[in-house]
Image (cartoon, rainbow, N blue to C red; front, side, top):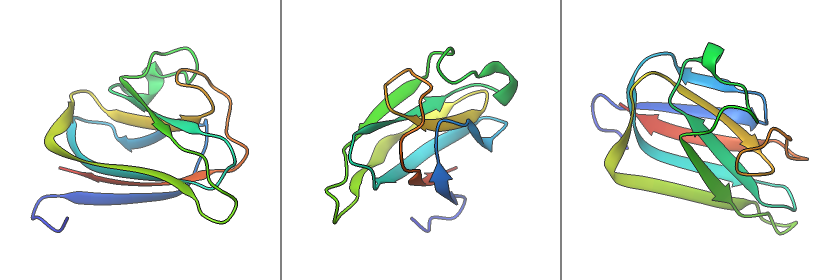
Length: 116
């Protein structure tokens, strides 16, 4: 993941509050989510500008399930895309308890992204 032109990002505390990765177009190459909670969560990804996203109302572009932790190990999900996912407008994200909802998980998640 050290290819020239890639941009790594780490967020140590992701909940249902929308976060901005970029306010312009980008390609998502890789993501990894760590879920310390006892229930599965969903990483919601939006191809939009922040002003146009209301978590729980705006339909996500992608909603990816992340398994629950075990109490001794975090649940995790990661994906390296062979064909990067194009976000044309912007890249907004949040973690919630349902695929399209707005309820925050009991424990914040950690997220890594690599984009170009």
